[in-house]
Length: 520
Image (tube, rainbow, N blue to C red; front, side, top):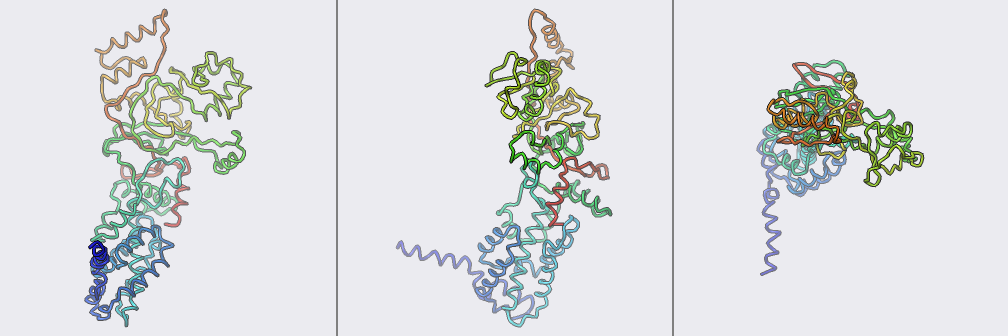
């Protein structure tokens, strides 16, 4: 009895695939009826399978997703699913039409083998085969190239041509990418034309860039438009309708509510990396000498959620800044640390008199100290720090150097983002008059609501009490709801029925252009 159950397995498998192996199979019936040609009634699935496997092996080396395509057809017993379902009703012709029109998206149709596909359709349509086995190579190649072109075209439009995380070292946004399940579902689609229509980008920003691209005459302009069309194809994390965006080339922070701008302000972002950065890093990797290490203060691209505000913040000075700046300033001026309100810690214990440290005893690449700048007017972070989770110790903050906002090129920070109107931003973030007044009082500003004046008077009295030492300390405030933040990079976008262009401050356009070269 036990053995008989095992004997049932091949029978079940055979039954599940009998639609393909019966004579003639579905493809034979479809073509025989369409062309009124009896040779297709002799369609031999075993002979076709051999041709299909050889054809797939010869073509798949140049495919982007060969494993997915092979796995799909293996699961379908190598049946020509696309030709069977979509040749007769003209949907494969629709595919070729979409591929030919891909120039509207900046693609070269030949990357999809469009000419070859068109020739195969014509050859099959000519109905000149004398024997059915003469049709096998044409059907197999048409099936395979159609599948590959269909996947590539839909993936390019839905997800973009390149994965930005593979080409930019400081791109930390987890963009969605094609997966094998999604691609298998595409190949199993019941309506090719509907799928091709559905993947066309629908955002107003993309369509605006696309219209300008089709009308542009200058090669340089077309290049910039194409690059930013690609950026709008990348599938960003879901921000919701209400979110904050910092666009690095625009040096601007914008708070969006759907398509409406709630607030907008200037920002200063991280300085551009040194020229020849890659080569200098190679030299540093060999020498290990900090003098050879090139500077790179570029603000990373990331997605997170702003979850708190620190008033009167403390600045935990990064090791890189301690080595490249603080160390030299302390050696040059023994009172620099105390005058700058910078505390020094050794093994997490505060050093009472940092001015007495003999810096000649320490090399800057092996500093045993940590540095923190206390709250106050001289703090590099100003009066507010806006915090969000990220792996780069990046945050938005106020600054005591307001002159930077008057510059045209505001890529001047160490990597964090300085914002022009921190108080206005804090008010919007908290979205609560009571909490906002508490925050104002912490930075010695009178509350907006006069019923809260008692807080302010008490604080001023404490500061004025000469018998007690008033110590300025950080205070934390949390918004009712975390607000999504997207730090991104666009050098062109549509605005008020025209295209706005911004300088490629980090030279990211050039790197993206090189990565897209084979698809143009």
